[in-house]
Image (tube, rainbow, N blue to C red; front, side, top):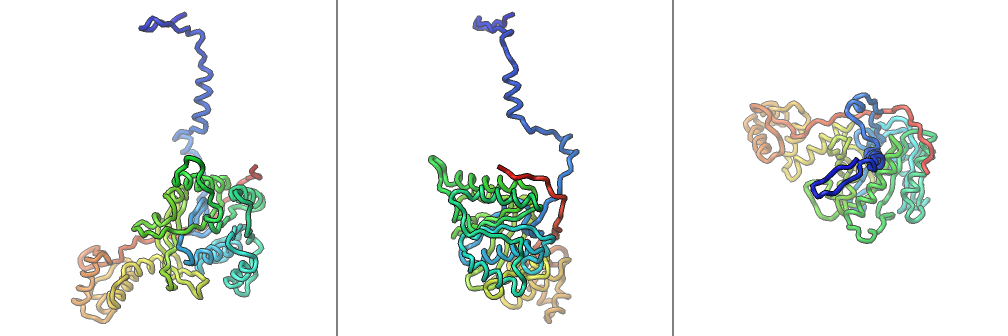
Amino acid sequence: MTLTHQHNASVDVDQYDPEPVRDEARNLLDGLRDGAWLDQQTFPPLRYAVPGVLPEGFALLVGPPKAGKSWMVLDLALAVAAGGRALGNIAVGAARPVLYLALEDGHRRMQARCRELLGAEPIPARFEYLTRIQPGRVVDTVRTWLALRTEQDTAPVVILDTLGKVMPPAVGGESAYQRDYRVGSGLKRVVDDFPGASLVVIHHDRKATSDDFVESVSGTNGLAGAADTVIVLVRPRGESGGTLKVTGRDVTEADYALTMAGGTTWRLDGANLDAAAATADTRKASDGLGDRSTEIVRVIGQHPDGIGPTKLGALIGVEAKHAGEYLRRLADAGRVVKTGRGVYRSPRTPVETVESVEPDPPKLGVVS
């Protein structure tokens, strides 16, 4: 049997073998699912190492040198390992194993810093650390530890401090972006193999400023693009107040106000994340304002449903017409929002509180 073409060429159809085509299709489309399959699945809920701030997956924690990043991650590590409270007011739930790759520290400094943060409390046994790793083996080190600890427990946490200590050079013909994305993707891939686990990588920010805080990540956008979560610590030099800016694929984007006591201990500036977000919003809205306008912004922040000039005037001790003038000026400057006739509120969108969820432990063995 032959098939004749317009150029008088002929093909022997009996010799056509569809099996290689089918094999190639199976290889290329391995893992293909449809909507009906997806609709029937039940997935475990997202888990948080630090509720509302640090979900499972690969996170970048970014800030300028000497801003207090290492103090912050050590506080988080000790809280998670002890099942205590992170940043003073965030309950983390059940204790989990933590590996802190403190590549800029030694044993003496590690002990001193832990005691500074813990006071009379003992250093938790689930807190483990390394000050050195074999060159070029950071991913292997993280994978091996996660595999061993996941056999015993669920949702371990790894902190790498800092990425600059293990950042490999670009390979031949590779751009800076390609190198950054390769490194970020490798870190994400290793933690994705252990559902519920978190990997926090400390990195410096770039000196250039930008309205988009994600742009502050040093290097190209390759690292931030690979990360599930980006957390930026902002603290003006010499000041105790700071802001934690959080965004990501799964976490609610928000700014949280912080204070640093004694140059070592970070705490939420508020009783919970909602309060800290309101404080951050008030700081931003009152930045550069005089004392009276700052006071008005603070009062408005305490009334999420809005406030009018009469009530505001009574609270701050001025006539309603003067309070109304202040409100109009602040609205024109974008510091407050007018939501109705004579009603003004903070521009911040309320933040939902995220609870820590503890699903059944996954059954994972040692990964080769």
